Amino acid sequence: MNTEYFIAGRIAIKSERTFSKLIVRIAIAGVMLSLAVMMLSVAIIKGFKTEIQEKVRGYIGDVRIFKYSLNNSFELLPFVPQKKTIDQLNNNPDVEFYQPYATKPAIISANDEVEGINFKGIDKTFNWDYIRKHLVSGKVIDFADSAKATRQIMISQFTANRLRLKVGDDFIMYFVQNPPRKRPFKIVGIYDIGVEEIDKGFVIGDLNIIRRLNNWKPNEIGGIEIRIKDFSKLKLVSDHIYENMELNLKSESVSEYFPAIFTWLSLLDVNTKVLLVLMMVVGVINMITALLIMILERTNMIGILKAFGMTDYSVMKIFMYNALYLVGFGLLLGNILGLGLGFLQQYTHIYKLDQTSYYLSYVPIEIHFVDVLILNLATFVICLVVLILPSMLVSRISPLKAIRFK
Image (cartoon, rainbow, N blue to C red; front, side):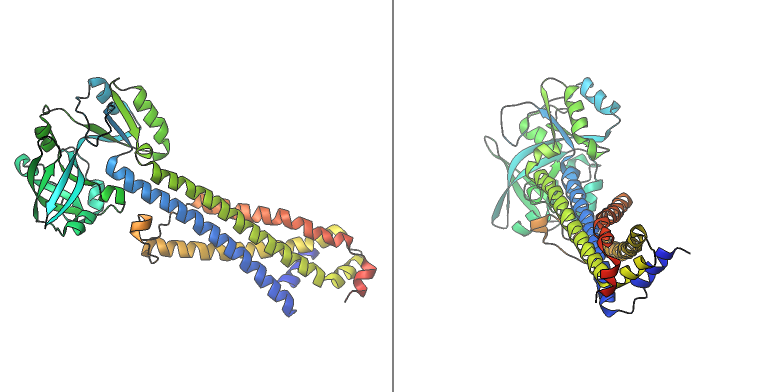
């Protein structure tokens, strides 16, 4: 029989001392809450980053190619992509798809209100998967009939609310040029991305409208949006695209186009690290305090065991077994609490957010098995390593003085 394990079990589980039970429960609760908070923090931060990145990259792509110009206007210069550029995009295994587009500043006039926007022109090759996921009402532009497509437009929920518009409404749009030119449009769809910089700044229409207004050739475009397969390779793929395209073209990644958003997302990583350290410190301090109190409370027992011939190492093992039980049971409850709340939020979205401030209407959760495993192992190892120090206190306890201790 493992004597140390048996005695540790009596102390931790079957102790009849009220104070010991209280200390054990506090220690277990501390580990449980620390692990649950760390687990939820990592899941929420990763959820935030993924959801916001998907919102931004889904609308403008991961990498944009456009003609190099010193002009800072929202309107892009026209170009016809050469075979070299198209071939490198077709042969690049990291590219999921690409699509042409162009932009032109304009002003919407409707219901005695005006709103300045950027008209984003796209063609029949446009990938609608992302927009369909954020479609509030209506449908996407139908390019089957090219004549009807030139009058169809999609606007954001933000713009629709500002101008009191809905699906099926008509309005006039004035394009900024000399002289200004106007075009009638009919709203076929309303979407809600949730990122104010996008919802407030863009509407979607037919690329041929920009070609006609600017007197472009039928095959000229303003730029190319590229979607890559693995977003973690963004810089690597973006640099590779830049190195292999035409000299008169320029590329820009989504992180360069929206630096404020991606800087904010990078700061979230710092907040996560600080929170993880704080929670780990709280859990460790709680365990050390609990173990010290239990050692002091069992001073008399330690003296008796030493008087019977038990070595300091064996006595240390008793309290290390005790600590192992506290940490293990705390981790079990922490996983139940953390994963339970995480999956509850992931499938019900019960905890809401202000979308205007956080770009999301609910708290996002992204749980990875590797993250859960690392947090469990790190908590377990750190707690046990740190608890070796207070457990060594038993070697300084004299049997004679301990037996007299009350």
